[in-house]
Length: 442
Image 1: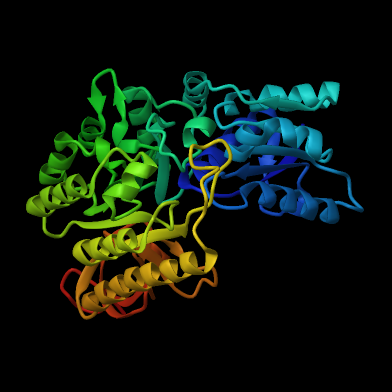
Image 2: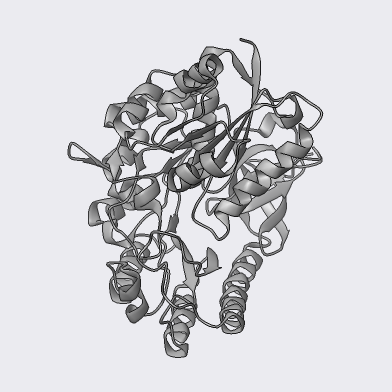
């Protein structure tokens, strides 16, 4: 067919993984990836429904497409992902420019859906939950990602039903991929040049396939030659079991950063959210990790001004941030998602919500600055991933996922090297390469 496809990806790491797998799939029917959207014969928008105005972003993107292709042949326009799952009927009816709508569990049908459209010219939506067929299909297609740090989805969906969250409705119930299937894909990624594997799931630590848990998977990945680093995200406190915590005693490749969303520092608010954990249990998990390895640091997610949050509740969140000293966190004002239990709850005054968000972010950002400042004049291990966009410096990440910039040759890409940190800001460390003899590399 010799067509070109461009994918615009919004949202989480899992969407990035899905987009790469879609590229791998459509290659079999003659579609080649293009980085120039104006050359596209097919334009796919991979959507995210987590943040505010997700649906509006889709229609804005479609409107932008109309202008770009006003004097050109219209591309095949596909809306995929979580917004597609939640809004599929409305999208087909509301926007004639959209040709196909695919939910995130229907990507195994993308080739036949595109081919059928070219024959019948009939608009179609595919939104059934069929994770088993999806991953069985993609297990037969090699993952062509050649990044130093690669995502690998091992679990999808959620059974927790937090009252603010759309994931159970857009990704379906929890499903864990077969153990061997995950290992085979990881080995292929390593053969392609990956040095770091980041295991993904909406509740990644809920992974359980025929008795094999995330802890078993990490220890098996540890044995693969070529893997330098292992990470996983995103976890739920309810599924942070002792066997997973204990892996940090034995694994030399599992990085000492634990991303464990807490959402609020108030037990009352956590109950309103239906989070199924308390601050006491969260801090018990934190203490267990710290006893195993004091170097372990936490990052988290916070929802600010959830309906019913009082000043007292909010101050509990500030107190938790002071206690844990999160190395990096994401914080957002609550925004109701249609179809969730919290969608119709009365929201808190906008001025107050903004004030609370600013206070939380000030504390979180100050933690980041202090931690990064404490690393200055020390030597750390950095996995070099690539060059910066302007090609002037090498880019890598610390064990804690912090960006590190420094000068050096391309020979260092894909290697874990020693870097002496000279300066820092909130998000980035700046340094120089040190060789194994602690001599500067010219």
